[in-house]
Image (cartoon, rainbow, N blue to C red; front, side):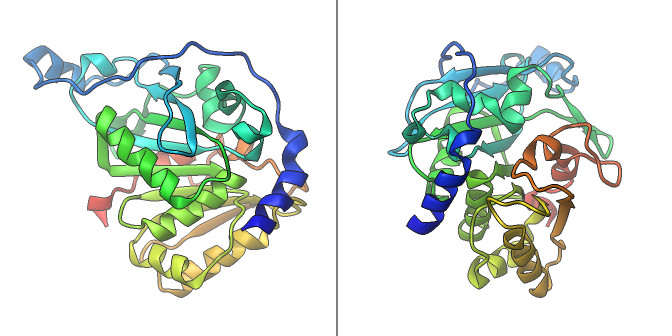
Length: 286
């Protein structure tokens, strides 16, 4: 583990960039039983950009704080929402000298921060909007850190427990692999991007057995984290006769950053971006 962290630290420290600060937001508590008016609001698709705010409260020992994206009409509804946990890279750690707003530099968090994340997604004739949690870790996170965050989010926000998804890039992509392998009963789908981990037999078999949907991304010539990591995970999962076959998209590039393209809502395969693809899957649907 230390060797893995040191290699990635040395390789991607130069990738981190600064971003402007955002106002801290208070926790949004669950609401009481819905009124008739609130029930009607539940059926309306979101059309306005999500609210994306910083919460400076630590979660456990390794999460310094987090950003949360909430649908614009969250307070007007009573329904539960799908959750995306977006895990950033080593350049966003507090040990890299970064403040909480560093998590807004990349991937889904950047899209939300710039109001470029779609308000809703239509899948199988139904409209969905996400709650998004973007934690800032102090040190390289383990699967238990992600599990703690999900439990915390479920206590504070209205989360649909059958639709929990984990998307991660680089360090966070590796943690997405690890979380799915260690807490396979909790997650419906994962999108590890340029993920730094090791494809173990146990984690791969757990992912396959739990019928977790997997769509991994990597750049073919990645010099920081070899694309072989993703290839090995995909091969091991599918060798366990996964009911939901794991798939891998390899971009032709020598860069480490495959997440900007992969998380772009405009990037689609078979007519679906990663958000529409994830929403096909829930724990109850397996």
